[in-house]
Picture 1 (tube, helix red, strand yellow):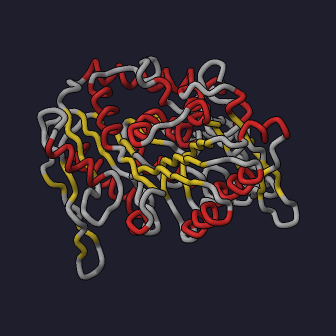
Picture 2 (cartoon, one colour):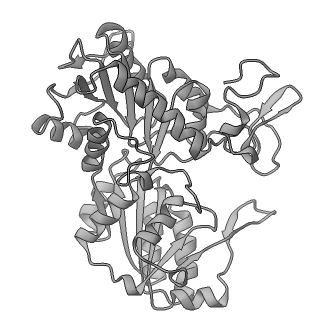
Length: 421
């Protein structure tokens, strides 16, 4: 990432949002903000590799490998593997890993099934949410590069862990505290074997920037349009009665695009601002102003966010909205972490705040708690939308060699602000 202590970053300063650059303090490179590439640079960097592939390999000579596609996982890998097995993309069967076997000394043994030698490009699909997941990806990538002879390997992750761990400061004081840059570390570990990354809803711009620091382009995508189209297949949204709600004023580029896609005016949107209690160090939402409160009265609120964990922010929003007379909340979450306690939040929103609630989640990753049981026991509150079709569409477009940054069907999925955003 940093070749010499005084040399700074790998790419020129023009490649980055200058306001997010790290600073050298007492011999330490301090990341107080999430390092971010500009869209212009990221587009050029991605397309250079894209064009190199088109010039040097047959893009139709590829294989897809789906990792951890077995029945004890509740993420997109299993339905995707089954879908690709029945309806293959290209001429080769989809490959997968077998369940991990362990020797008596606890060392593991990994095997691939239906792997193909002589291919020029391998797509690895996986959702790593712990160190074991990243390790398996490295092993499979090495197999394709070293044993099977693939010239390019693309990693597509519907979910990639550690996106929050991109700063090395204390969030309260703003001072360097020795925190490890785990987001950079995992990207670094993969970059000797992975040529390109495609990541769905990375939590931070730093994921892409760190990949670039290690010489690899990363395409950050949000499935927001795919998800809202799926929601509208399930239920009819009264766009005239909708109000878009964002957790804070600057957050969620995808949420702003969703608002525009739904044709909602500025008078059909509100954004909460946050303030930190200096005593408790907890963050809370400020009240909406009087004009904004009138916008939500009697309306159906629609929210989009990259992930749901404890659902604490959703609870704070619901508490405010019920005071302002909102009618219902439709929440769309890409990554359903759902840490222990989220069920009580949902119950409180429905029973205490008296809000009609619907939550749409995806299978980008395996939830931490048993969401499937909740869905079975409480029908109609949470619905799961599989990302299988979206993953297929990205792979098929990439095989064709399209420029995602310029293509009218995909440019809005890219999580980097364009002009006037």
